[in-house]
Each structure stands twice: as C-alpha cells, then as structure tokens.
Length: 144
Image (tube, rainbow, N blue to C red; front, side):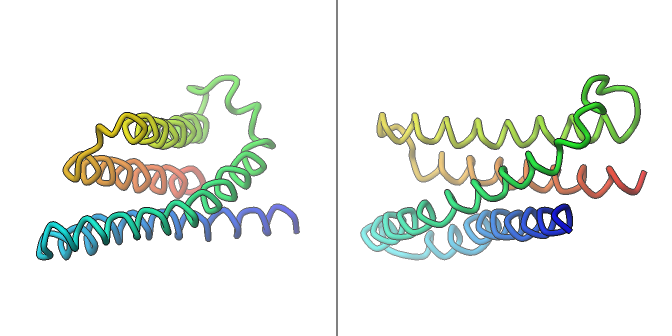
C-alpha cells in the first residue's frame, strides 16, 4: 500500500512539474510576447514568485517519493548495463540530476542577475525536454 501511495504521489507531482513547464513554454511565453515590455516584466515577476512558492514543494515531494521508489531497485544500479531496466533506471536518474542542475544554474544566474528572458525560455524548453524524456524512460522501464 505504501508503494502504491508513493507511486501515486510521484506521478501527481510529475504531472504538476511537467504541466508547469508546458504552461510556461507553450502558453505563457507566446502570450507574453504580445504584451508590452512593462506588463511582461511585471507578469514575469509575479508569475515567477508564485511558481517558486509552488514548484519547490512539488519538487520536494517528487524527488522524495522518487528516492523512496528507487530504493528497492538499488541493486539494479550496481550494474547499470546489466538489463534494459537498469539502463533506463540509470538514465532516468541521470535526467533527474540534470534537471536539478538546471535549477542550480538558474539560482546562480539569478543571483548574478545574468538571466535574460531568452535565457529563461531556453532553460524552460531544456527542462521540458529532459522531463519528457524522463517520462518515456519511466514508462519503458516496465514495458520492455
């Protein structure tokens, strides 16, 4: 029962995380380009503040449940090339670490005030691609 609860929590948080990225890339950014610079800047500040409040909790629950779910499979990681399952699990973990790396880079860029609107868009696209590939790996782990 605990495994099912963790898996459900993990899936719900993945939906929230990827949905937020999808919204940013395919809805918010195109709409923002049609707004004045002043309005776009204000919207970016407000959206960014709210997104950070929510996404930190989403990420904490997503990664926390993910660690709990991967724990029983830690032996498969001892030899990551032993089976298609091990390869996909290793790739999934690598992608998860790369996603964390994106956020570390974003924090560093923000602290130095080096992030531009174009940089944020590219970062969001990269995050979305990584997250979608991660989902394909997760699905393939149990179907191959």
